[in-house]
Image (tube, rainbow, N blue to C red; front, side, top):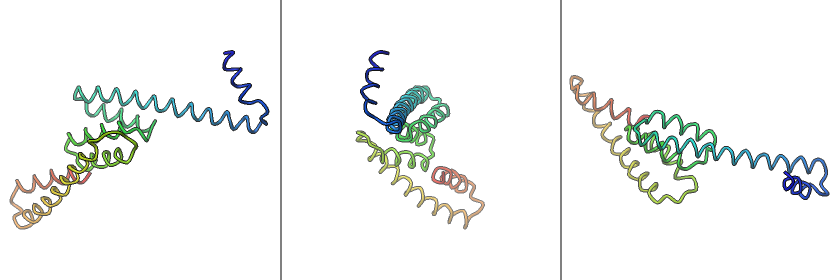
Length: 157
């Protein structure tokens, strides 16, 4: 407590009341940022454990909370993209990986994963167009209609 008081006295020495208030606000802002980053990190760690145990929905809920606390948490976006990819929700996976790629990171695989997913989405869109034509020409083709519905769900979200 004494060291903290000494630091505060030196920090505020010769400052006006408004300058002191501004310093305190900046310190509080830094403290809140640190606390939020730590909370986000804890949610990502819990989500990672959920992911490895196959609890994808719980992991996604925790990752959403992590993003609320720290919208610049690379790991939250990368992991949620991975989960969406494994759930065949390619559009959501692409959006999360693209956000992760735009954040500062040292990950060398995110650009590759994003490129693969971009190609998969492009291929899926082409296949959707072909299936739409098939279903239009042959409405009784239930297999083509089911495949079309499945692909539209993967790409459309």
